[in-house]
Length: 327
Image 1 (cartoon, rainbow, N blue to C red):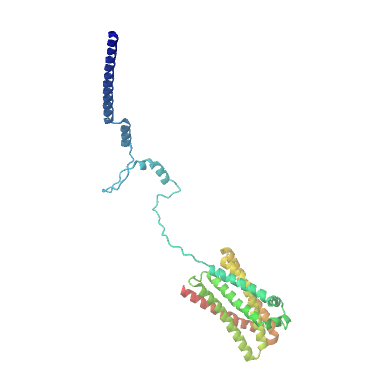
Image 2 (tube, rainbow, N blue to C red; image 1 turned 90 degrees about the horizontal axis):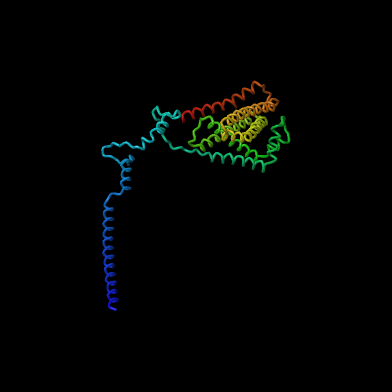
């Protein structure tokens, strides 16, 4: 019994000694590991060292404004130097001459919408005349292509229609005025400072010329007692004018809004056609008046030159002088 108790006491003592040893060993191990970690933390990191070496070798500095005004060399410029040299030596780029600078000026847009709407209104007005005065419109062309106007029924119908005749005469004044303005603008003799005033002036000038001509012929017929002959001549003049007013509408559109080549062709054709109309007016008038007035062709030609052509030439000369002074 005593031996068993002694063995138990020895076992307990041995276990307590082992426990104390393990505690001391664990404490010493903890201290050693802590010291090792502290020393390692104080040593320089190899990765950081490599990064610093790369940073030292990196030669891409940020260019900051320097007080001395001198900019350091940039390795990026040196790296791009071959490509830059290739661009400069390219034969498509003129890098040898002095650079040229162009001044930037504000572009002024010249709108012609108003003129377009004016021509559209003229076409609409002509369509309304064709609709409301259909019989007068048809008789007008039938009389124009009829070579004999002596007391025909169609001529009497045209003479009796006062309102359509007045409206078509006003349309001729408008059409001829717009055509004259279009020609002057196409030739470069007019500026676009005040186009509506020039349009009104052109129409008023043509209207004034024919009002003066009508008054002069009426007065001459009343003085000489040849009212029938002067009325026939006035009828022929305004008949041709009405046809010209209708004829000019498509050529106004062509000259105003077409390409330069087409506009030039349209201008030449229209001028030649107007010349043919005027010659037809003279021949038709002489054919009707030679039996009534007993005049020769020479005297009638003198009348045409003195009454028809000379005033037009004077108006043209005055207009050119006015345009040359205003420009």
